[in-house]
Length: 155
Image (cartoon, rainbow, N blue to C red; front, side, top):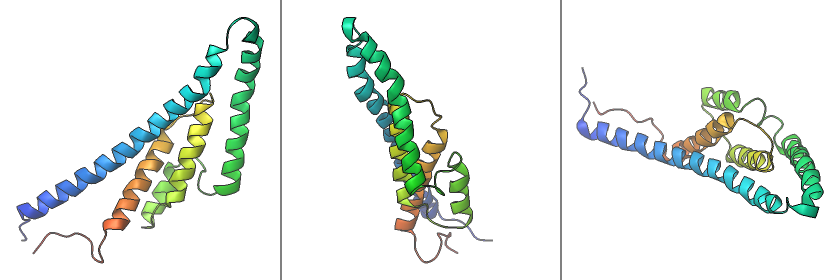
């Protein structure tokens, strides 16, 4: 019967806390990016929603989400046909079950397309994108700090 040392448990706890903090920060900045994009696009447009410019605002407010949806669709079709299917949760699960690293390009494409799609006024749930960003960050950290043998308690 092996007794797990306090040092090992402390190291394990600190590594979990570090990965959790990095993943949480990645998701936080991802979500803030969505809000910043939305504010950067719509704040100037809402300022024009006065008097004679009102018809222009309505035309732009109708066309802008459709245009961003078209650009997002092009990006997904061009660079992410296998990566951005479904909500991203199943893709992450597949990578993890096969013990493969989640490609960093997958997270970057997911971030760009989500910012573009939501920031220009479209509706989309961000849960799958948040999981993808967090899983890609954790996968990247795991690959960066992995050794040839998995972390095991001392005997």
